[in-house]
Image (cartoon, rainbow, N blue to C red; front, side, top):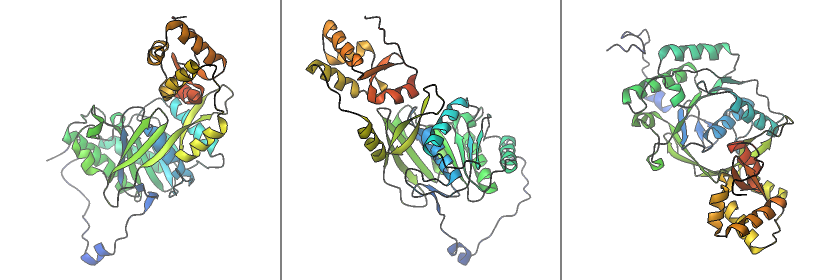
Length: 356
């Protein structure tokens, strides 16, 4: 049958026919990112919202473009194409700036960001993307990122196997046009995170590599391999979001991924152990610290502490005056998480509560 999205029934291409010796002589694909991503493959990074998926994959693409290690792992250097699916570019501006601040000598001439909406289920859009990549000056594309599947899926239904099949066809066409390249799609979990990738199971069936992202306390990240078709699954990787102050002079920040040990050592060097005026102050601080960068509102924090109104207000004022806590986007956080909370949730709050 004819597929209006993918042309007619006739094909001008001939199929290759390999002998057994030719099959046995085929080289095993090499890793694009050591132990994680395999070249010439289709991979997905997935997780719930705010699980650092884009931070991880953007950092991977920038590392490949510049030949810089990613989370201490070697990469193959090559071209990197990052498709935002029409999402606002400013957020990527800050993230790339943060990565550059941490890798000042890295050359990103072989990286391109595509800010336009692209429908990978549509043959014309895929062909136009291929043409644009070939005309971009990027040398030897090694990774093409689609952020996210939903933004690159047009009007299709993710739960429909046929629509998902069109998406996979688009990815296959990209892989055929750029041998040795890996296509990475960023996707979400369903309503039940334990059920894995959202949408049709046709996607999981087509993937070579499936990687789940988890984020705890808006800082601690777990990267786990759920599928590695052509090799053993890698062991869980622990990482952290590290806040980077941008060289813009306006207090702007963003984040990068770093190995957990690196960030913990830096935090230990930068942070002094707080001194508290009372056991109640210590208790209130510990309660808030356990909330991480998520923080807590005045009312929720007071309730968790179990202190009466006047005692809690006195303790909160002590902690603010000592610089142990800050208020960001309507919520309190301990100072250790201030930069990350500001990056994720909003700007500094003057700290006046209706309860005062």
